[in-house]
Figure 1: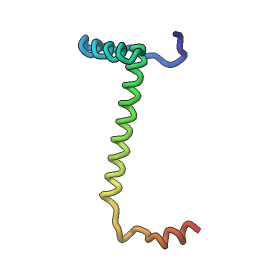
Figure 2: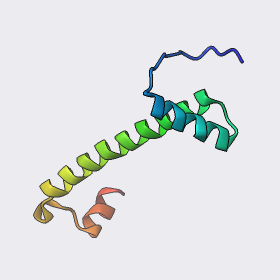
Figure 3: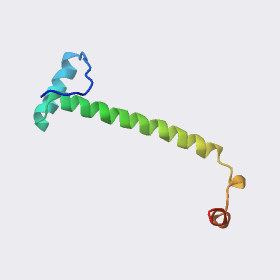
Length: 78
């Protein structure tokens, strides 16, 4: 099936290729679909890890003395 999406060419170790083929057969989808889905999942997980690191850094730098109370926040938001 033709596509207008960008393409890449990747070489795999035979054992990796065999695993990808098994997944493709088990799911009843094309090999390219399996690989695209795995790459997308990997990118999403990498993004999640990066955002978690940002969140942890923010938690480490949090100072309760500088935080607004609920009342201050409500008044500020009016």
